[in-house]
Image 1 (cartoon, one colour):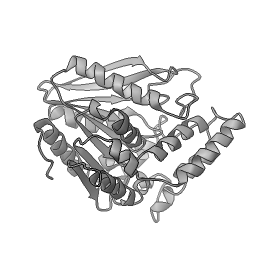
Image 2 (image 1 turned 45 degrees about the horizontal axis):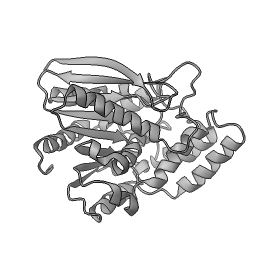
Image 3 (image 1 turned 30 degrees about the horizontal axis):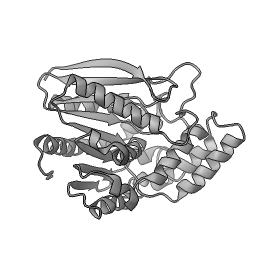
Image 4 (image 1 turned 120 degrees about the horizontal axis):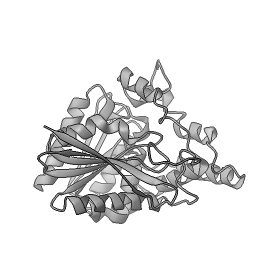
Length: 314
């Protein structure tokens, strides 16, 4: 199937940059997907997945979050969203992209797919603006994290010391330090991302990946982590089709335990269209795993179920 690609931008609600996004457009269209990437990476890493969606009839827009990828400007530190604890402006960026796409394709149903930090943004979005999309996918997501309280304390201390816009290796170690230890006899510090050594090498060799956040960026992340995944959060989420998808060896999801908590909280609060997929031995980036073809097909089944308004059965 022929796929056309289009690069566009719009001003970010953060006021620190423009948002860059790429849209993959198939000849025959039946639905739409918005993809939100994770921390310290960029939308270009999702091209294989986006092309797969488009080849199967789904217009797919992949955005670069503020201070990531092409959504930057000269002098802007990486891992910085502005001097605020609430990353509401980034949620507004997702809404803006959704509304731009709906104006172009008004007859389509749209699904929001967030990976890792993008899944935390998506969880937050679901509780605040949940009716904006017809369905949601949480990839490599996490559950309640008590360490977020300590993380907020440290981030605020760094900001108080005047280091709020400097990369913080100390906070980076708090965030990611334990992840590398989750893989026994690892060849690299990033083996927790995937069992596919080639994909890990590509990540490590990508100059747009792997940078530490600023304390302001970490503070926004830790504050959001404290808002999501709880019973109180789940009560605010509308009853829409939701897919939780992760590897059972993903340290971000506490080896599946955190993902199961999110599923449990949604199930306990009247959500009747929630599905969970935990892949044996899968690590953090299931879209870059050895069995990614299987994962892609599970994504497609979910998208087709949202399009059809039915139940998802893998």
